[in-house]
Length: 114
Image (tube, rainbow, N blue to C red):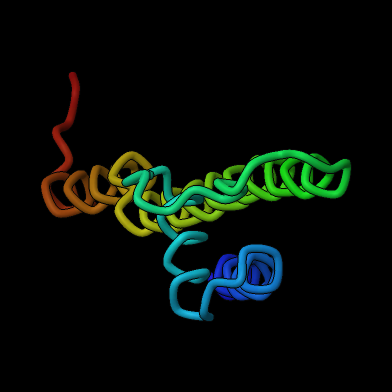
């Protein structure tokens, strides 16, 4: 989660400089965009694309968003793996069966086959 927070912080600095947004507005935009909520209330490059620098900024913003989506997806996947490993019932079933078998058929009560 530190990687995601750092990426959002980096993007907030970047968009703050490019779009003349304050830090909180830039961080809000980065979080809403990368988490795929996307309200659409903030749009980078809304002044237009008259110069080559504006086009390069929009290309860099698009790359930032694509990599941010990949980082967010990776973070969600890591959380999912961690939670599922904590609650993995299939891994504990053989141990439960073994304990149930030992409690039911210990050495004194094993059925003798004739």
